[in-house]
Length: 189
Image (cartoon, rainbow, N blue to C red; front, top):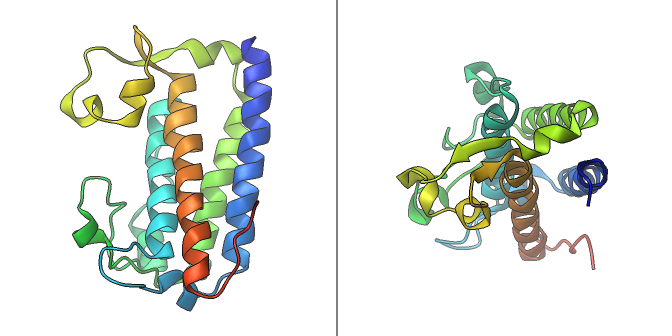
């Protein structure tokens, strides 16, 4: 498959996935997002903040563009834990809450819009560019993306698919399941 076809597919898949996040956030209240079912079960707030903040952070590696998130945005969102939680335990992160839902949605929309703009203008040849070469350091060696990487290492395409797309679908699945805990329905069949 040519890089042009792959990039066209990525653009359509991201728009579809982002639309699920948009539909989910527009159909949930802050109380539902912050609901804690029980200890060691992540609230929707974790899945939302973690994915969007990690997406924002991963974008730096892919495009060289700096984080959107800064202290002003964090102050506005007012998360219970000012961290995406990638290197924290479930016991540390199962108390994540979002303080200002509208500020979070604004941040999410900015992150998603930047990604869509970048994909719309991405040179298809960029998909083959190697971001991280083997051997991987300890922060990457045990990740899903390390398992996906080819012999030369992680490419831009690997990063887009692992760090942004597959990661986003994983957390959307958690959100869909958790919606049932607060009396809402799933979003797809």
